Length: 179
Ligand SMILES: Cc1cc2nc3c(=O)[nH]c(=O)nc-3n(C[C@H](O)[C@H](O)[C@H](O)COP(=O)(O)O)c2cc1C
Image (cartoon, rainbow, N blue to C red; front, top):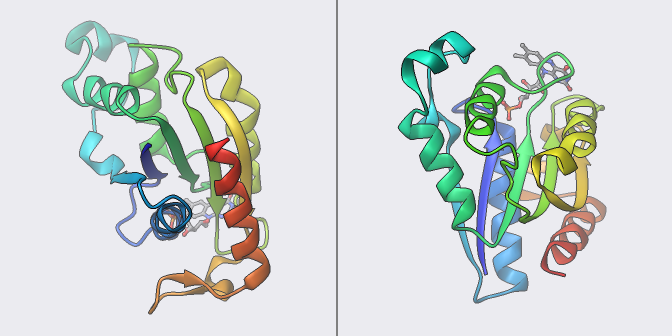
């Protein structure tokens, strides 16, 4: 099983990148033949989407490559960062470009959507948006999980959740991705 994993954040210090990397590691612990590829959405940066730019540029190679990455995977783990209650601009831009190639961006892949933030809300608002819209964009969404107050429960030295209950919830969510 080939998992494609990424954080919907362009920050080099992204906590969602840390979470998605940890989730990938736990998935491999559950299924030792699984391969997890983690991509950085910074590698798919494009001009700010508009239909004018689209007329000018067509489908940029980065958008084609992103769609192809998803196509080549068996399942997806995405961790959403929340900016002002919604997607980060970097992710939304990539998503808009990708959706012009195939509106079913997620291509019916079994998916786990995560989110985390430094606050108690755990980026629950963006996670809800991603969950609600998932069927329109072809995500076979198996489960979602929000991790609140990331800094309180994640050990940055050993890159792991220290809260046993949250770790169990994440393991349960990853197990559902497999089914
Ligand atoms: C412009 C901006 C807006 C933010 N808005 C929210 C928000 O609406 N809800 C929230 O929980 N955190 C918000 N935050 C805090 C982020 O959750 C925090 O920066 C987190 O580290 C972002 O995830 P990332 O590190 O994976 O990029 C905001 C941060 C920035 C810079």
